[in-house]
Length: 109
Image 1 (cartoon, helix red, strand yellow):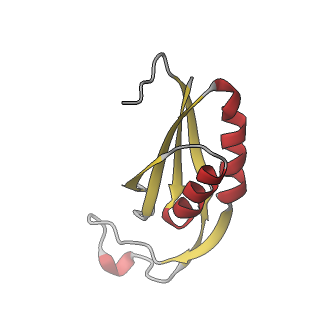
Image 2 (spheres, helix red, strand yellow; image 1 turned 90 degrees about the horizontal axis):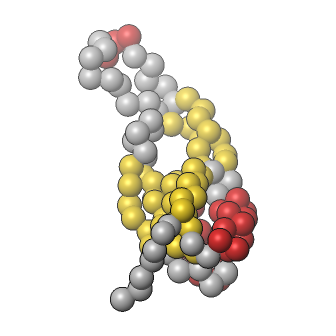
């Protein structure tokens, strides 16, 4: 048994849940926030048999694509505002960070 944790951009999260449901994988989605861009993320958690892990990862790869987006940086608190870049910059967003962990025991109640 494996625990699969997927941290995905908020824009990809509902499509990922839909795709996992279509693949007959039950999952739970938790709202979270990224540290670098301070943008909305979703942490998706599912428990699957060892043989299902690759199928789950394939769904994640298919749905969570990386892309470029213009973002206006948030000025740091300790820096003077006049020396800070205020124009939008291109950043790469999307994709997913996935962790696969061994599970000794899982129960559904």
